[in-house]
Structure formats: C-alpha cells, structure tokens
Amino acid sequence: MGFLRNLFRNEVSSVSAIPEVQGRFKKTYNYVYERRQWLRGQSMKHKVEGIIQAAISPYSKNYTKWEIYFKDVNLRKTSNFVLEYYILWDFVRRANFYMSTNGKITTHEFDVFGQKEIFKEKQEKIYQYLREGSRRDAIEKVIKGVNQNSILLARTLKANPIIQLLAKEFSFFQENLLQNTHQLPVFSFYSNEVMEDYFGAGKHLPLKKFSSLNLSFKDAIVGCAVNGWNKEEIGTGNFFRFMKQLAGKIQIGRELLVDSSEYYKYAPTNFFNDRKLLEAESYTQTVVAEAWFLEEQTSLTLIEEDYGS
Image (cartoon, rainbow, N blue to C red):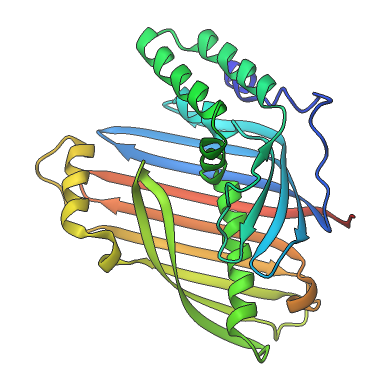
C-alpha cells in the first residue's frame, strides 16, 4: 500500500507558482469519494480522501466565477488497482473557470496553474509504475494531448466526482432561486440532468430528478433529490447494443437499474441570499445484469469558510 500512497500523493502543493484561491466566498471542504465497479468479470474498488478549496464570486445573471484547488489528495484503499484512472483523477488541481446556473463548467477563459509540474510528475509515475509498454505509451499519449488543450483540461476537471458534486449542489440552489419565487418553507420541483460520459466517452446517463428543500427546521436547512433514468433520452436500442460490446457478451440483461440520490445540509441562515453549505452527499448505482455494475458515493464536509475580496 505504501507505493500507492507515493503514487497518488499530491506533490505539487508546495510549488510557489500555484496561487491560493480568491473570491467572494471561500470555502474549504473535506471530501471522500468511494467507487466500486464490475466489468468483464473484473472488479475494482477504491476510496479517495482529501481537501478542496473553492472560492466563488458573482459574475453575471447566468454565470458565477469559480476558483478551485485540490490541496490534498490521498488514496486510502484499493483493490485491482488501475493506474490510468488515478493519473487523470487529479490531473487538474488548480483552476479558474465560470459555471452556469445549471451547473455547467464553461471553457471560456478556463485557466489552470502548475500544469507543467503536474504533467512532469504524472509522466514520471507512469514510467515508474507501468511496466507494459503499450499501456504506458497509451496513457502518456492521452495526458500529452490533454495537457496541450484547454478544452480537454476542462473536460478532465468536469469528470472529477468532487467537482461534479459541487456543480450538482450549485444547480440545486439555482433551481430553487428560479422556481421557488415565493420562498416557501417547503418546496419541491422537477428537473433533468445529464451525467456526461458516464459509461465512457460520448455515452451519457440522462436523469429525471425530483428535488425538495425544507427550510422549516430550526437547526438546519435540508435539501434532497431522488433521480431515475430518462428512458426517452438514452435511446435504449443503441444503449444495450453498446453494453453488449462493452461487456463482450451476446446475452445480457435488457434493463438498466438506477439508484441515485443527493443530500444537502445548510446552516439555518438566509438560504436565498447567503447559503452556507455544511454537508453534501451524492450516491449513484447503475446495473445491467451480466454486463455492468458501478457504484459511486461522494461526500463533502465544510471545515472552514471566510469572506474574501
């Protein structure tokens, strides 16, 4: 396990060229991400913990400016280790970007810091831990391509589950602002979401969401969402043909089972003007019999908050 800690340790945090995040609201969270996957008879399980800073500033009616910094990244446990996954997991650690009110990161003025050092670090780890030449060449080609393209760097960041949870919560809050115009103490609403590239490049998971916000508790404001897959959007015929190819089997199940939810806990302050996110959790499990299983659980816990410039 020692070599895994060395492989996944964030070694760029001490680089002076990486600036601290700056913004109107600066928040520091502990995060935990757990993943279990089964595909082609192989299982993978891992848990990642660390600290992320996020500084958020108003920008316009439809966009907010974000600055994020993965200050700490630690692999806690794993089985059937897949190095390529971890090489890309924290390939972008410090970035500035704009996020739309529906939780989408834009590539406009997307900026990263310390990328030269991160690329060098990842390249060294590829040669240190990957013995198979074809795999080594393939992942090195990928990171070279990503490192030279701001659009691909933005997509890599968007694929990180911690960033996805922050985006989901931001979208949840903005949807409440839009729909709960009378600021009712208990409010529910429907919406749609697409988890991009969930099954692989270009293969998305569209969801129908039922969300609820309860402001009536004295000690906390609580929000939650329950999600189901949008069959009309996924195109079941093409999807199951793709699943057969992915699984390498002719006979597989003919139904996608989805269990997905979100939970948000806020301080009992003025939610609509100055929300203070204390905790956030998301859980998603998808199953196709004899073909696919993926379970992901992500959580954030606020450890520090201050008001910046």
